[in-house]
Image 1 (cartoon, rainbow over the protein chains, first blue to last red):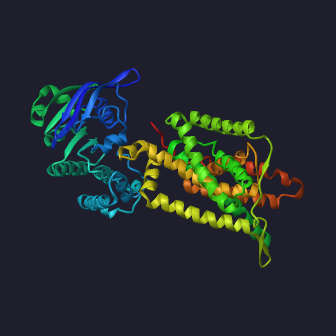
Image 2 (cartoon, rainbow over the protein chains, first blue to last red):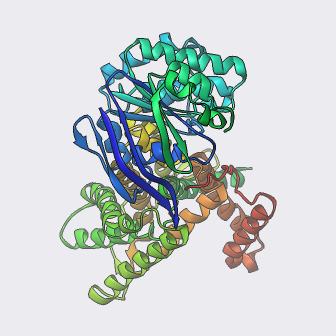
Image 3 (cartoon, rainbow over the protein chains, first blue to last red):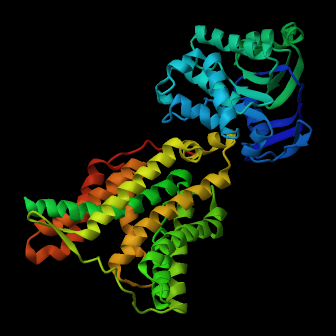
Length: 233
Length: 295
């Protein structure tokens, strides 16, 4: 469904990402793990069209989306829950969700709002509250719900558990399980490597801008040479 | 007491026009960090069209829609021709571009139309007053205030209740995050310029009526008042822009009536002193918004 090949992204003279190859098949939950500064966020940002890439190609759902505007990529069915969530803090929960469904018709948007209120009871309680007043865990759920509003074929999440209390981290992983059981296709960047490997069908390990390993969660967990990746970062 | 009331109404009338101009400046600033020094051209160009229309037998009933529509179109053309090319550039580049647009437009009228003042008739009701008790209220002020209230209510509805309004607010808060939701950058920027042009058009109707004439530099004053009012209110805050406009209008009128007869001509100077004092104590303006760093 998503195919990234030979992707290189540079900031000035520094290559933040070198020759990355990655695929995500339909219905798969794929993890992307590695220490801080390994290029995980750069990889998602490049796929989503936020960062100008230097070389390589990205194709999604059969069409080439290399160097395409972020709004076009979203409209083709590929959503990103960005790093730091970037919710619209002055807008209410409902307004945030509506913006998430901006590409949908009003009737469809209304249906999705209902669906999100059911999937995330926390949000229903804060429906008319400005999103800036929510706790980190609530904001993270809003960010994910907002991305789901567009009915994406593939949803990418950048560090959904970052900065959350342990009990909320559990919640995020439960949510990943729920989304997986709904048959959704997900690509997740996670610092919490071991837990991610337990949930993911497959995973890629990034280090210093290069993909150094990939395989199923069990395969990767068994590799002692990657141990520092799992405990670090 | 009655003098104060009369001044308040006069000040609100003036301030309403400034508020509409400032709101237009703030909408565009919010979306692309452009402090638009070409905002006055949205009055200069419709001003010349007004002059042309009256020479061709039009009347105010047809000129009013002409002013509003031409302000919207002018705003969209300026975005397309100038600002779309410097999108994402530094705030300073954007500022200089807007100066450039202003100078090109006024030089164009100077060279190809005339340097002289072009007059047209004011509406017949312009100088009429309404006696309410001991008050003599200008009908013009009442019309301006009433229209502004309606336009502001409509703008609030647009921003709060429509998907376009939500997209505009989202893009102003975090442009890239809005694009990640599928908000089209072109549409939202053009929408902002259209809204800004519409607001300037409504303000322009009253400004143009009041002036009764147009010159190549006719846009400078409305631009200055709009930008100043937006700064006073706190750049980026839409509520602040409206508040700033009203405050500026009231300050002008009240100062003019309070200052001793000999120095009334210094009103503008005193207004600027007050603005300077405001910025010393509240550098962000009346309703300052936290500045979000754009990457």
